[in-house]
Length: 119
Image 1 (cartoon, helix red, strand yellow):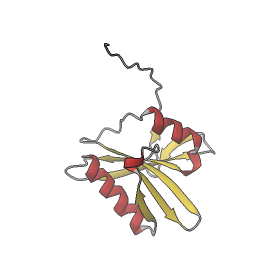
Image 2 (cartoon, rainbow, N blue to C red):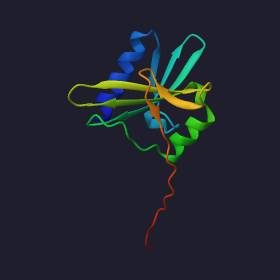
Image 3 (cartoon, rainbow, N blue to C red):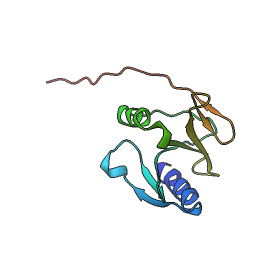
Image 4 (cartoon, rainbow, N blue to C red):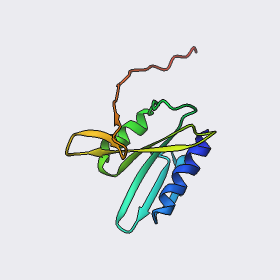
């Protein structure tokens, strides 16, 4: 599912004239870097099986989003395996919200977690 979402996002930005680089393996806090002239976008991609737009960001992804909000995009691909639909969320300084091109707003719920182990 994640791979189909990556392909969908890659194709979309490539058609807009961006050069795309996968940085997934580098664990930098986003999946793809899209460059077009002086514009360099950091694309975090989430593949979803249904139509609901809900996913989790890792601590690294969330901190990267906060550190460079103007250049960060959260790309949610719903129906990733059947009929992929890309929703791109970017930060709007004007309204202080993460919004998609179709007017959807992202809400963030911070969570605390812990790693447990024996030994």
